[in-house]
Picture 1 (cartoon, rainbow, N blue to C red):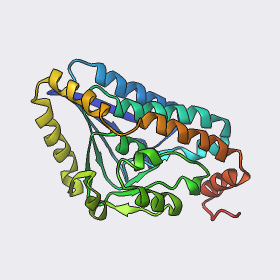
Picture 2 (picture 1 turned 135 degrees about the horizontal axis):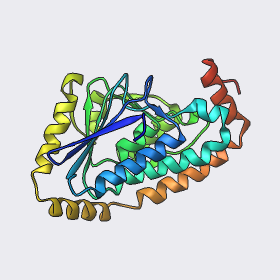
Picture 3 (picture 1 turned 180 degrees about the vertical axis):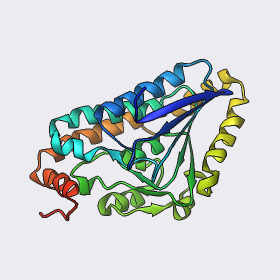
Picture 4 (picture 1 turned 90 degrees about the vertical axis):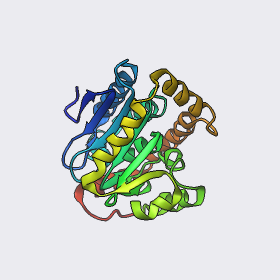
Length: 250
């Protein structure tokens, strides 16, 4: 088990908690470990539904920019870990509920966009600042949350949108206080866990099959542009500026 997260299984509900201070940004190996764990939970006959949440200041800040600044060659490994994690959520044989709070950035958007049900605290904010980090990716998952033009606005500007405002777009099941976030997610999970496990697994596969397009193929397409972006000097400057806590200069 990775030190970046931990799990617990009770009454058919698997709870996976991301916990890597200060901002729950995972490195390349931790992303791959997370994918392996989510896959294993879905393959466990004791698990009927998965809840993913986090401790700390926010849900997930995405990839570890400091790792990529020091080891830019690891972008391939990071891409692989992100792809595997988002696929493990989306293609999991059991429903996955994501309970988010604070910042939901980058890879956090990927997890959320891949999930079946989203519960958010009223303090949650969603953003995909990939352009400001010299990368691409995540648009396919953001487009499962917001309509096309809103996705483009958020992607081009890097602006964030709060859960109360985002509620109008329909992807959030409930907005609750931070204190009630976990209990709300577990309450929904309990309703699902009480159903017939074979029926729920069939339903998950059926619903994935009627989606428009292929989420994994779309994300894989985007990842090619991430590699293209990383060949630009501007990409390296964005990461260096982030680490040095200054404005990037182009």
